[in-house]
Length: 395
Image (tube, rainbow, N blue to C red; front, side, top):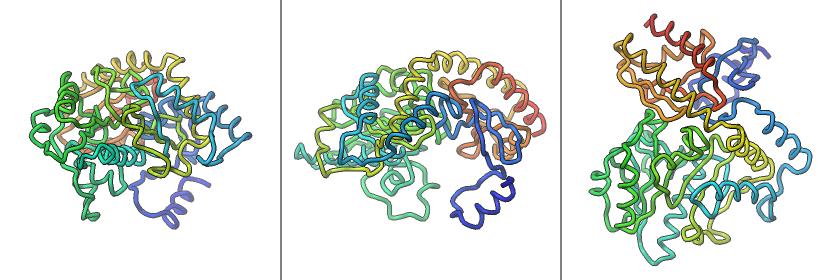
């Protein structure tokens, strides 16, 4: 099918929950994708930070092929070898001692919310309130929607699940004032992605950790978007020297295959016993085999170092545009997640870049977001900049 035929078929049979661009991507390799009509694009969206290794990384492809020939699914009624191995690698490279697997970031966050409530019930404490941050994004299920501190995602789905309250991001005092006797946890993205690539001050997460210790609360980090090497370290919390009690992962965990994970300490995780939580597809052989291959590639192929090097180069290049274009308000970055805040809407800029063969993203209406694969090169950045600068001159 050509692009228009795919668009027509989508319109006829797919629920209209996305404002899709009028292209249909059918192939990808590294930092490049091609549409159904054969047009090539430089991809600085990476499936919304899912394709951290680039498209169709050979080791992930091989792992999927080999696992698909052996066993695709068996259910968690039985022990699953690649699931156990992926859990081991994640725990040995993080603060965690136990893992729970599911299929998405929202499900991972649901698991974190449930585990928090169960943990305090087991302790005989009636704590269930969770403080999250304004401009946060934690998912689209009813619980994670309530946890998300953005009214635009919640509109039309009220009443929301109770006992979530919101505090300004990067303000420890505001969080402290929001704590009550019912507060069980603070849940946040260490770096807000969907909310505009908002970077915390150096002592913010440490301040939240100290507050949690003081008040007997849990600290939950949602690293669904910024984990798995996106910031130049495997997990963003490593930049700040603060380990959470619970952490959630998804997007970049399996090189493009759907997977989610919730990691926790033994002390917290012991509240999940048989029957308390489950996921039919969670951690199945195919997804976790892909996860092992993807995680090993990140750790063994210099991707973290490349992320730091090219991320710095990208930030410097994008920041220089502020001198030339007065509608660029600020540029924020950590590794290979870069946000350019504008004083004007960014949708038309994204559209014009796409027409010229460059895929970028706009979030929060006025923030251009650059989240290329971790294998991106300085040459790719230069190519991106040529297109972007040309489009900005037309604004």
